[in-house]
Image 1 (cartoon, helix red, strand yellow):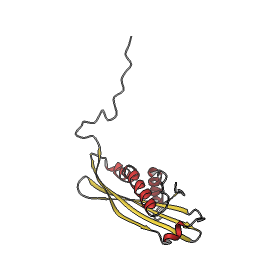
Image 2 (spheres, rainbow, N blue to C red):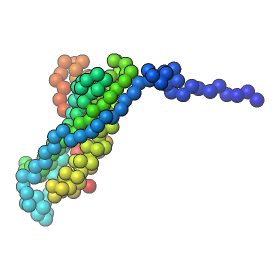
Image 3 (cartoon, rainbow, N blue to C red):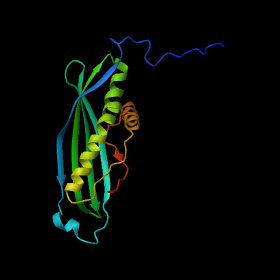
Length: 173
């Protein structure tokens, strides 16, 4: 009986010394702000459910040889009618080490893969902050960072300014 040809494993052509590597060196809260302007009035019975808007932005910059700082910025505005219920701003950062990454792939990795790795931690911080602020925890829906990256690329190609995209209308759980 003839053996089926085996396909080489991914990255088989790369030697261990030159294979692309992405490592998270550290993660941290760079800035966190939560405002509850109505204070105890926000907990009164019969309050209408706020409309919540989440804006997302990702920034990346070099932090040395093969090191990059990536910042995931989340801006949450919750309003009941015209009145602000709460506001939250979080900048969650990570320091990433990248080795043997082709230059043409670097921007996509920094603006897609790195924030994808940071997001679950930032999401938990947002949920905890809203809960600690007297509201149900806000569980932000998963974000498609690849789609945000494509939109950013398209905006730049068309000469339009790149603004922070608005992501859905997540509701507190």
